[in-house]
Length: 278
Ligand SMILES: Nc1ncnc2c1ncn2[C@@H]1O[C@H](COP(=O)(O)OP(=O)(O)OP(=O)(O)O)[C@@H](O)[C@H]1O
Image 1 (cartoon, rainbow, N blue to C red):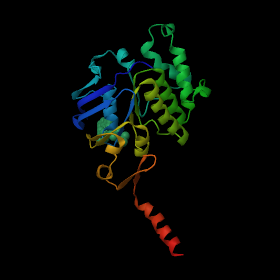
Image 2: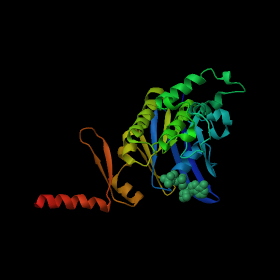
Image 3: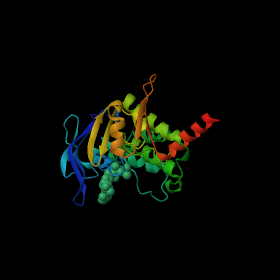
Image 4: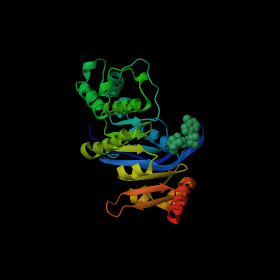
């Protein structure tokens, strides 16, 4: 992996067609760490992450590397050597093999000739290996399932070999095994390779398990930033999501878990009461 210096957004105002959807947001994606962005639908998570990846032009604010370098001023190629984004949806090319799609990740290192990139093949094979797609390397990507395709796009990002890795809901479409493997992979990249990982997650428990820091967005504003224990507070979550959310911490492991309480859960309470009455 390339050396990461982290990526910081400050005072970001982001909108669509004059409608402001993110206001004065700050976001630090620290090196050797995982920063999770959480919040309700429409709170601005994807827009903020896309702005950090230069895919959404801010109306105001800055995006800089931690050494002060202005990320918005770099050439496309230089930026792509430092930052990559796994976005929520990408157009699926027809008839292109998995290996070739993963190879797209090497575009910042390629000049006119393929042998301009001596590390390319090893990076592609490694990315396919850690995402479990090597066995489908010769298959066309348009024939894959949603979860298989998600892993191929993740491999493409990993092949890009950047110090900053941004992921927008990477566990969507994935079965339980691959959800957990992607969380493990994020941690390994941060812990062993110093990568600065920024990830949008809907599952607050996954965020609590994997992240060093959590940023909670509420209607386009950063409501709180801090460790999982600091941000995942029952009152703040209940207010932000508009549904009762209980939070508990395992006294032995310290693991935090959040439990949204819906009406359907009353069924279990009623059943238990009935059983006790028998
Ligand atoms: N291309 C677009 N054009 C106009 N408005 C948009 C566009 N994309 C998003 N928005 C609006 O911007 C706001 C923030 O959307 P965004 O996708 O950033 O939220 P999010 O927190 O990622 O939501 P979700 O959890 O549903 O993915 C929403 O009100 C959304 O309707």
